[in-house]
Image (tube, rainbow, N blue to C red; front, side, top):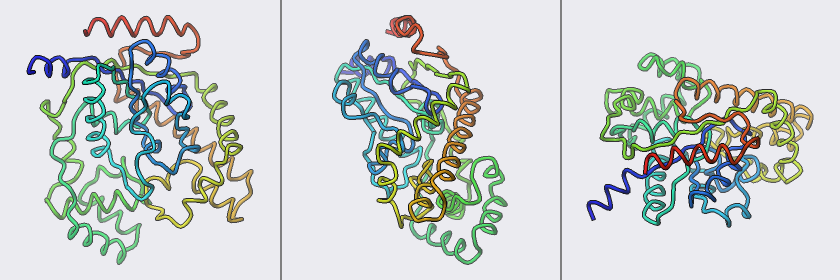
Length: 317
């Protein structure tokens, strides 16, 4: 049994990362067919049940062909974190390996995959009494002043958290008053014993930015045609600090459906925001993700790309 577990822990795990609209999901399916793969999501919006269209979640047809995990498994009111995702991903990776399948992690949320690759060492859970204290201070001081208060104890939030991100600000501050240590400090205590697996094959898709811009625009209009406006209507009245409410297109289409802005304005804002997000994703992966294999256009020479990844795969086995 110990030898079996050792084999499991040393088995290759494939990661396919890249910006939104780069074709990650389609490429993962083609690859999964060759390695008996199970596709595991690391996109922070595709985890939500209520956001099938706007998050570009793989459709049922693909899910029947290849097992897909961690897609649409959380309710909108649940604030998913990198730590929670990591814990769920570890379960699905181990389940996949025990079944003799290859885990293929697919997505574009850098903090999620970083939590798996680098570990999160002992981040404490925010206790209710401290969260209540933080929420009370937020309510009394207002968002701008509260942001300054949190920044005074943790200057690193200036690069990581928006002044409008109520949920993350409250969590950061509640952890600090609870432990005397910032969340950033806790997360930076990642150590080797938290790296549960070591044989990762890191693939990165980075298509030409002009192509991405066009695909983003086309895809948004298709989402609208497929029912995205009705989808976001179901989220009306939700707490705006919830992660799901920050998905690109949610607030814009809600504003359109309530008559606040025109459809043209909603579309323009959403497409612009998604394009800017894709650019930020590329920047993050440039700095934080060292790929073993890079692909600019997987549709060109698809078989060659798969062959080269399989060569990397065979070397690890």
